[in-house]
Image (tube, rainbow, N blue to C red; front, side, top):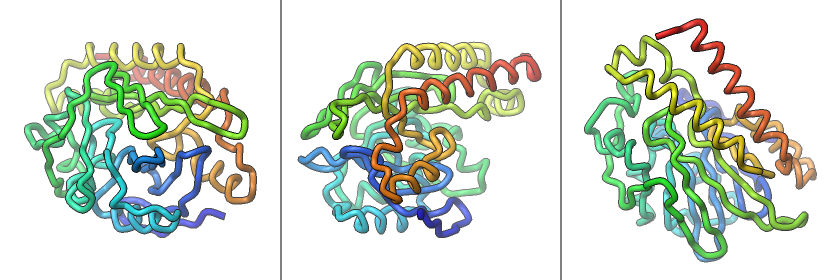
Length: 268
């Protein structure tokens, strides 16, 4: 069974292989994953700085070396996805990749990284690579299509790639940002945002993602795809627990409905 080591800013969960060359290395509720490309590791989202020790330990537990991380790819710029990036990049020499419209978060040019809201310090960094829509990250046996899906943040990106499994070649994906917290009126007013455009972008991004066929849903928060529940099934020998074409659509439908409820209860 997956165990978690409690921490103020997240729990360090037992690492495991999702499917093929994709591995979960922590944490709960935000997630960090690695992809073993055969020519180095791609790490997706670094998590909080405060939980980096657990992510590094989990990478070692799976038999990998963190120094083999070549790229740190970010679904978006919030601190729970980028807080450990500077330290991890300094440790490993990995190149950092951030969506163009979220660069101001991680460089410290604006406060949208959410560090102040949480009472935390953020280690700023300048991305080595700035993603624009359609950017392709290729390393070893993996080619990741990076698609701009704004809404949760202006520079949210979703990722699509092919994974080799015993069941054949399957499509894996991560929707880069589904939380509605940044679409609520208090947040919008606090940061003087263009709410109408941001909300419109969010629902368009969900609509786009619903057009994609995805067999392996990789959540950037554990609640999105029941990461821990499915992980327990994997640890109990059910190696195909994450192969579920309905998981992607169910997740998107769920957040689409939550969005509709938001705009009814919180009109602009």
